[in-house]
Image (cartoon, rainbow, N blue to C red; front, side):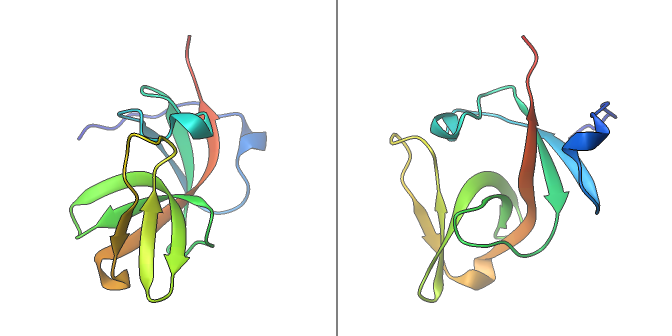
Amino acid sequence: THSHTIMVPPEMLGPGEHYALEVRGDSMIEAGIFDGDTVLIKKQDAASTGEIVVALVDDEEATLKRLRRRGNSVALEAANPAYETRIFPPDRVKVQGRLVGLLRKY
């Protein structure tokens, strides 16, 4: 991975720590998030059901998905019908942040 600094309008960010990620793939297109977009993420380790989060699965795969709690399980839901919802026991998924903004270059 490589990182760089990007300029973000301060009104897009509230209090707390934030980071930006470049989106790869089309799993969230129906939420208006496209391949190549930059998402702004507020660092946090918990989220409410229905929120779009960065989730770390099995300590190795980071993914941007909508979080749903289902009983004792955690569902990571794509916003594209071509992708299946993936369901995990909670110990396999760590929330790393919540989507708060989006930057797109044309």
